Picture (cartoon, rainbow, N blue to C red):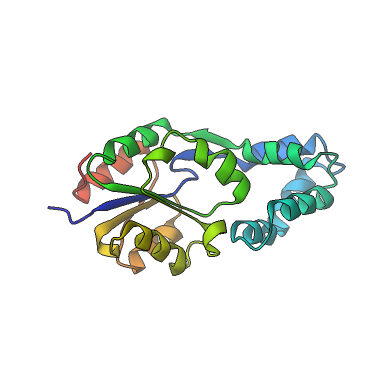
Length: 203
């Protein structure tokens, strides 16, 4: 019999598909720069997003910096609306979370920021089912740091060996395993169901 008591989900590309290209194409319509220039900026200034998602930068400061660097003729509210409109929810995962709740604690563990958390994550139908929520901008640490995983385990009141973590990024799956957690990489819903059954999870 499985000793797993808690199932912990990543958000992006597990509960909802993420397409950052939607954001870049949208702001390109209001920028003095070309789409290619904006794509290059997004790569070069990745540290800006890391600062925002690790809680070191406020939403206002992040937005103002994006508007300046990308030479945008947009208000902060318009930028926020474009920034959060990049998700396409994965309904089978949402149904799975609802079903798992009958037998397990379920939780969210995500590298994310205030805008995405408030406008997207908190509005998803699965959100009320989470026993705990661990998000990077509130914790002040990002995956693959052990700190953020330990925060999730502490909130749930379980050990690593009593938990199973689901993420689409292999490095984050490996980091969970290093803490004694069972962990699987999300590639498709059918594959996830198979992995859960392999770990003795009742679906």
